[in-house]
Length: 244
Image 1 (cartoon, rainbow, N blue to C red):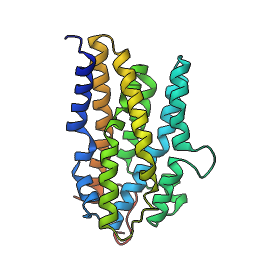
Image 2 (cartoon, rainbow, N blue to C red):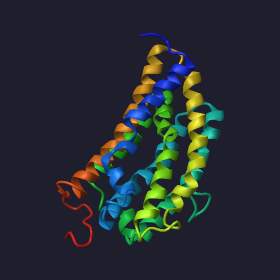
Image 3 (tube, rainbow, N blue to C red):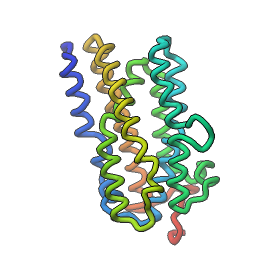
């Protein structure tokens, strides 16, 4: 095992995204290509809500164990991005605007009663990873943000084109997110390139990004199994109208 150059480490991270990012998942091809029913879109938005809601919990966990005030100062902007500066602001509120627009009752979404078990397990595993691994690995796991602007562009174009129940207002979360993601990814990438100083640390950084990609992929696997084929919805999970 040898020490990679900074450029080689970045190339390795980008290669992981090119091969493993959930943009490649078949469910996203269906979603963005207009092949999903409204119930399937609802199921995606409802389950993804838990991921969105837990992002600031994950980030607060990271901040709490960080001794560098410069890193804490930078990272806290992510809390504001998702929680907002006041009630009704921020990414979580915009995501609830999406579920509202899809006709889901807000109390039902936020209660988490309709979650797929695999969604809960995957998201909780991510929060635990950030809590339990090294700070370097925790920051590296956020680097899926390197690839999110592309999938957001595909999502907005495809969903606005293909679904008459989707509007630009419904997708407000996605229109606001790309500049935040680019800022966050640039900071995290610079951090890991500067702080992964041994071959072992570099391999841990690469493994952290692979883990995060697996979290996102597993969530879509669960959606596909429950709502596309073979359509086995676990007891208690959301059942689209007409499928009950």
